Structures are given as structure tokens and as C-alpha cells.
Length: 132
Image 1 (cartoon, rainbow, N blue to C red):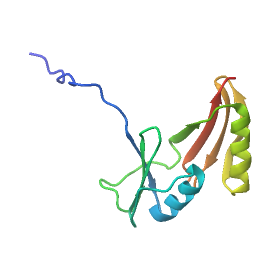
Image 2 (image 1 turned 60 degrees about the horizontal axis):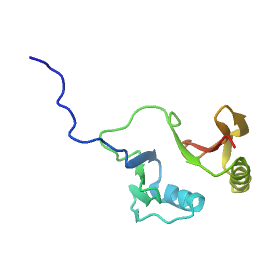
Image 3 (image 1 turned 135 degrees about the vertical axis):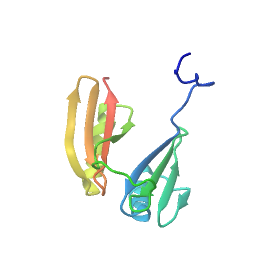
């Protein structure tokens, strides 16, 4: 008799992404400015954005998430694909003007052009365009 798990009856899809943040309303305001869209839900402990791709992007209070989260902030990143290396550089210039901390200036890498900024909680935000 096998102890293998039963097969999943359908393919699973990732449709929500969550970041644990210090202040969800403040983070929602930050992301509304960057994303050019308003959250569909905001409370003292949670905020939610509906992305055009269908992804739901949540900001959950690190003080109230259950079970308690552990681990270092910045160990993962949110990636935003743009149309070209010109768009990467334009987004970088805009985010510098907004005062974001830049962890990596625009750089040519083997997959294309990219830069990395940090949100107010230290989460990594990578903007990239694949090689032209």
C-alpha cells in the first residue's frame, strides 16, 4: 500500500500574493501611487488590490497575521515586467523622484534590463524588461 498523496484533481494556480507590512493603510497608499490604482479593500490590518492580470495583491499587518510570520523581510520580491529597457529606465527615474530606496540601479543582465527598489517595509520591487 502506497503512502503517496492523492493526485490533485485540477491544476493549481497562484492567484493571491501577500506581503506582511507594518501599516496596511500606509502601504496601500504607497502602492496606490506606484501601481496607479486604488485598493478594493482597506482596513487597519489589511489592504487588497485587484491587478489587471487577475492577481490579487494583499498587504497584511505583520502584527496580526495568524499564524505569526517569521523570517526576514526582503527575502522575496515582487516583479513587474515592463515593455522595454527604456520603460525600465523611465520607471527607475520616476521612483527615484518619489524617494524610493534603490537597491540596484538599472543593470543589463542575461535576461534583460532590470532595477530593484525597496518599499517602506524593505520588500524588494524588481522592474524588468526581457532582452530587446
